[in-house]
Amino acid sequence: MGWFVILAVLGVALLVLIGIYNKLVGLRQSVRQGVADIDAQLRQRHDLIPNLVETVKGYAGHESATFEAVIAARNAAASGAPSSGSEQQLKSALGNLLALGEAYPDLKASANFQSLQGELADVEDKLAAARRALNAAVARFNAARESFPAVLFAGMLGFAEADFHRLDASEQGTVDQVPKIGF
Image 1 (cartoon, rainbow, N blue to C red):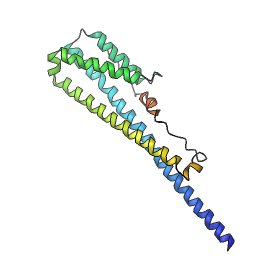
Image 2: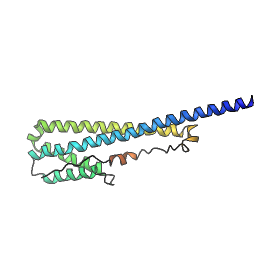
Image 3: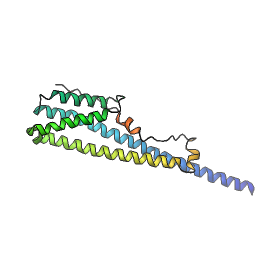
Image 4: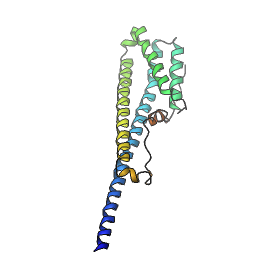
């Protein structure tokens, strides 16, 4: 009878351990998916920029300093440069480019410019949503990892704490290919 109780306790403990492991695996995958979603939105943003620059160039060709700043910031962000501010620099340069629409009424009225501007705003909204989803996934994973009894086994099972600041690393993701822009 004593052996039966010991085997039953070990069996329950094993089932609990399997349940903890499977839950942590699922939550870790949610974090990884969040990072991939952000990379996809950044890639889409990077792909829109050359089209936007070319459209603006047609109306404001003498604004080459603005174009060069946008392209340099885009290439730095797309290359995965170690600078954590590359995406912020890109956002600032894009703001300057979009401000040219105010200075050139014909550009502002251009259907192509309006369409690209709308697409860029949509990508920015999706990027913000992806960031919120990643933060939520990280919070769920870390909470599950640090809850009892998972905290007893998570480290041994190879589940390290997910970092909210990992978002910066994802913003340095590599874009498939940097297009050539000529002036």
